[in-house]
Length: 396
Image (cartoon, one colour):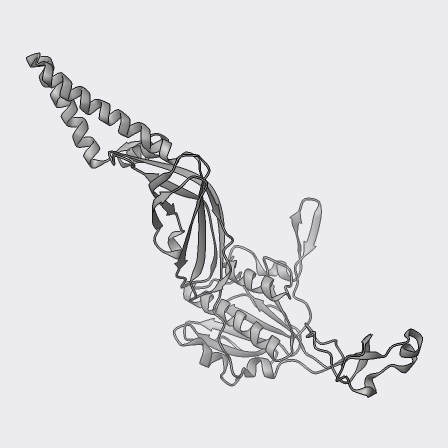
């Protein structure tokens, strides 16, 4: 019965409780009139049926001409509310009013949001903004919105679904790490690399990056006299220093058999380690089996927001065989040979890591087997707070 009434409400109109009562009374008076042949009973029955007919025709007309648009939803970190904004515009000449806006938010984000509009004049717009609390990372998508009304008599409900696609990205939480021996002791400082994601502020020592016109306050030692003589105005050198940096790869093993709590903790750890590495001057990147090596911060956080375990994939495909990603094209999945932080679950298949690598292993209490040729391991416990574990000293 519920499915039938929902179908009626979406396709035409669905009688409200009062509507059902009035319809029953109309049929009762009509049946009594046929038995008694009393004209006044026919009149009462006819008036009720006419009222029901008018009440059934007006609600769909009240929703005609309404145009719904949705503003893009800005990404947030888990724990911060999403800011959802909807705008309803009345494109007809008649005033609209007494209708509901129903946003079918995914159940993982909370209850369905409902907002009532009292009146919407012709050519005007109504903006509805509301926060959606978030408790867990993810990429949430929904594509429609419902308008519902029973105006003006309240005897029949009418609902119409309109397209309003939305994509809400909730990034994993980033822990404010003050120290992380796991990262601070990784790899070797070797070779010269340009500073990763350099700031726009010019350095006062190093090699020349560009020349620009002299500005008041620039040190005279930075004036490039030969170029200044050529252009007839003072030109100043902008310098860029060459600094030694460490390249680090944070790899999340999605092919292991994770418990839900452990995997969520591993994602938070990956996001926190990546952010901490950038603050410490590392050339940091993220590796997951579902995507290429990611370096851009926005792409890294988006990948961590939507990633899920994939235990069906064989980890050996990351090292030896090739697999067909696109028709007619083979692609080999392998870990780059740089210092790596390998985040995995206990019992997962081992992977050959580059020298100087580290690994974080989530287990249920028993320690994983260790040997001399294994990388330094930090054993994690999902039942304990994550931040103190990441800031703990290392042990083999």
